[in-house]
View 1 (spheres, rainbow, N blue to C red):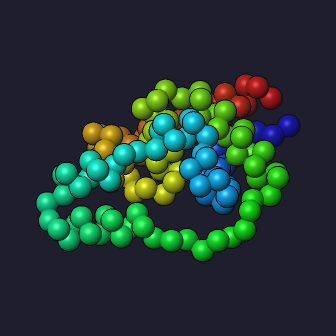
View 2 (cartoon, rainbow, N blue to C red):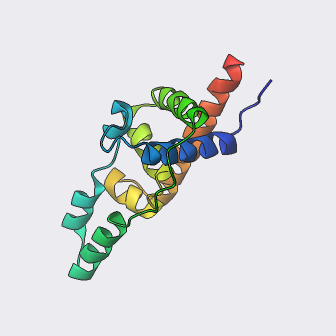
Length: 139
């Protein structure tokens, strides 16, 4: 029997994002992910104080990652499981969880979520814990 922990859920969330990036769908991410993906660049740009900050934000968004090849069938199955887990969260929490799993920094997530950095980190940890608890109840 597999016992889920917050760290295992965190790892699976990050794997799900990696798998989604490696799928050759270009814009075909699941609806639950596309609707939760933050529109933070626009919000960040309007709040940015200098031109240099705007250029830095644009550069970080446009970084190309080397192609790692298509994901394995097992990775796609795990991806689909995690998408189901995300449906267990309310939309604001889901948005934070997906953003953190995508590698967006806590400070940026905090700015678009209108919360403090510590609150964003706490929301992410609690969401991972809640998912792990629910998974352990299912076993």
